[in-house]
Length: 437
Image (tube, rainbow, N blue to C red; front, side, top):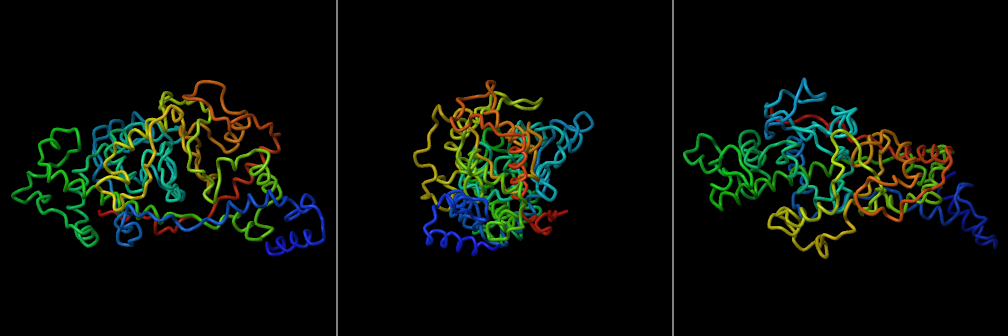
């Protein structure tokens, strides 16, 4: 039965004087339920990002892909093999970590660090590495805590984070000069400074390593620091352009909403009805990306050997975001009038809050929660069915998190529905290592 037939059936029932309560879409959903279902599909175009003028430039995206797989701007490993499972080399080695080190495979997640629930870069990162597929639909907050308000600004965090890539923006600038100079100069308004060349007589202007707070950075002139900051911002904008291409669509659920009755099974349809009804999942997992782009204290007591149980989530992230010169209102943004940061402030209710995760392809992207401590979708649904944990979490639990009184079969049905959200993988060509060798 096609969707057009379902719509016609609704009209026919209304014209015949039957009660709306007696009208079922696909012999399953009430009109109210079906209206909620239709808000979840289809996945729209990727939201515009006016803060990155290169966001949809294919040349920038191609460079971004190369930089996503580039290891040259990463610093020394703090942990490595053989003392740590999943290590990327021997302790002290540099140039061993790329963005792709924690975002790889078909679904661009971290298989390497598992079965550990956190990810291993140059050191243990106390977070689960999310897939970057469909990350462009988080609008505008990026990461579990929303520490960035654009993809391009978020791409600037890990290269300088000591436990992630342990590099510096000066290393990034030198890698761009040494390996990607022609591509960079063809894309961006200002060409790379020739003094980045180690053979240039003025090469002392740009030390091999350095970032804000370090002596090498402090010893540079302010104009030269600004040159490097612009290069670093452009590096992020190229990565942002690439990340915008990593989109997965055409899930069985989408085909079902379009009218393909056989696209999902009966258990999944029951799960969908629970999702928009009794279980109330749609209260937070709303819209075609299945996220309200908001932050909630979900009552998860963090556990795991590499997890920080005292992380404050959104509270700390807002403080960092407002201080970040690469935010949407900062000097490196291509549109400072977006208003993304208007009325944003640090407040007590943000303590312990984490962003609602989008659910597309969620069956392929475990483990789950910002800590990665729940291994299966059934674990997640069971967690929410219990109303979260009673204690051990930071902040005041959201009143949206409460016992659901689901049966074991109903839990299985919701899982069956979530499995229908797996779309087509991103093209293989976008997952290939194109970095300079």
